[in-house]
Image (cartoon, rainbow, N blue to C red; front, side, top):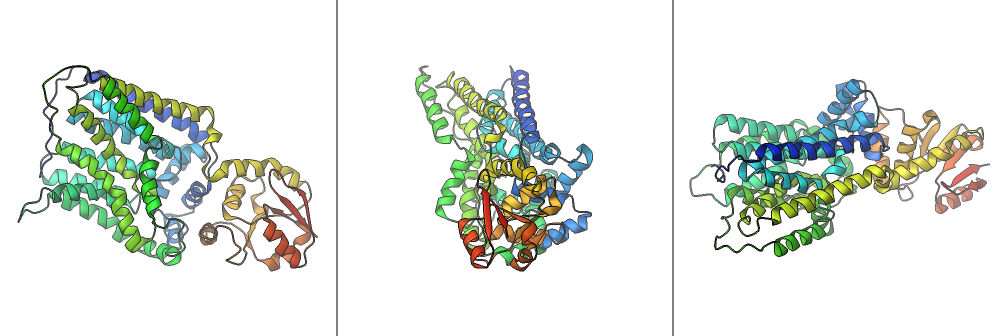
Length: 494
């Protein structure tokens, strides 16, 4: 079943549009690489690095089999190779994400160009620049690779209008690669399945591409099922991202953080510049545009599956919808071109200016991008670490998993850092604590119980204890001195 592609357009300025697309993509790539090198890693990224640096591939599999993180092993191997080639550090760890972001933009451009022309291909790239995609370009997690394989799969579906075995095999291979990067990638098949379903006729079989894509998406799930089941058994009821209607609604706003305002700008451009009088009607909606809008159904289907089976739902798990939405938006504008010749150029200018300006603002202030305040917390700890160490302490004890892992990673004295394990109802962020305890089987992370604290009380300093924790320690017989409360609360025991 082939997509209905629009007729070929004259080449005209296609080379110029292509060069502009490459230039815009290069801008996002270069600025992303700069940001990658100037931001500290946060908790999830440090998990990536710890696992990628394990001695053998078999050790990576074993660590993931003990629920040390939530991604398939292929992504950690990619980061491992990046570090071997470019050396250890934030830039090498984030380089695969930055490159995948750029590749996704170029494939989205070409998909749109084939259906419209280069101008609207540029608009599709600008749409991605205004989305959450650039943020994940400078994060050492697999989400831009998720988008890249989604963009490649869409490009293959559009480009190969026939239902040959070769096109089916390539589409299935793209789905297999995406499924090897993230367990939720198989949901990227939903738009294609819906597209064929609404055109289904009795006794008509699914297309070879859809069947190959289904097989390609399912095989990684089967291969990595031991890892999936291990994590599910441990965190089925304790996973932080439970499905909810609030998170479902948040998914769409997370895709485009300023989407409603940008949509308002777009509609203003269409209204003000719709000045040419013409009796021509817009082109009929194309099959590809329909397919692109169907990508908006992915979070909805993901919500239903999470509610019924996985109990794990986070907006970023459906980021693969972005290329389809960008192509659909550009195709929608293309259909209106006869009634607003200048509006598309104005819309391109607005989207490009907004996306590049936001990216430049982050480049000027890399510390402003700070998930959960982790960068600031780590920097605050590092600013007082030398002072704490000069007090002749031998052990630096943390109470929360995220600050502990982040501080231990950047500390000049990592062997002195440890985390105390409290009763479950008193332990901050139980899920993160459980994950790094699993990781400690393979990595030198230290955990204490209250008995060990009693043995080493005189040469231990506490970092970041809560008021309730301090009260509980006093009731257990400890005498506490809290000489420092900023930038971290620091307590000494007697």
